[in-house]
Image 1 (cartoon, rainbow over the protein chains, first blue to last red):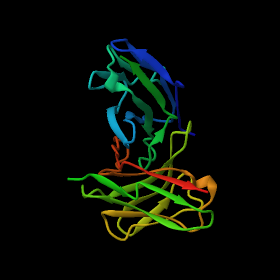
Image 2 (tube, chains in turn green, brown):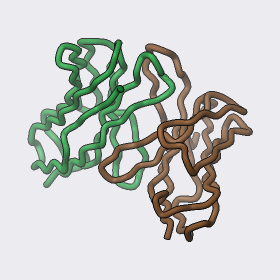
Image 3 (cartoon, rainbow over the protein chains, first blue to last red):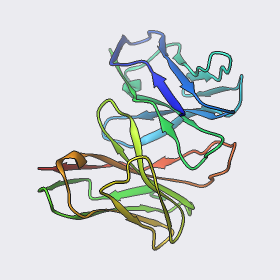
Image 4 (cartoon, rainbow over the protein chains, first blue to last red):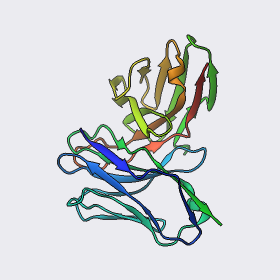
Length: 113
Length: 116
């Protein structure tokens, strides 16, 4: 079945470091791909999305490119801030069943000042 | 515009007790969802609704019931709580379901439930 696998955390970086959080997926057809972020004590918020191959989603300095050939959607940011500390979830909507989103297990990111 | 709200924020139950979690959205969304979040497991879909008066089972529906009597509200019920239902519960809503297109969901702040 459809699934999302993302790197396990926690990930701890110093402020201004480069960030990569890996995400790969298994799905038939052409799913839509997402990154959601969960700040402490809050619900999930959509961070960025991509709906077709080679699309690049971007928001708040974060980017991810939909790579169909490697079934990946890695999240990157060039210079992280303390305020980026959160849990990040990679997710997909299968194109055969858009009534649900399949989430990865989440990656906790902590940024040191 | 409050978005998606959930009540209560915290609750402690004893095994066998019942309770109802309330989700409300003011965005006129057709679709609503209930998830549970457990450590290391991401979010798992419990039940969802594609419109007023309709509900459907998700990935982990056992032990839960839902109702969507009004478009803006989606209730999650536990008839006889068990320790395995200790979790954080999130409600979400979305505007479109549309096949082949993205489906952004808007989440509430969560309800932390402990069953002793």
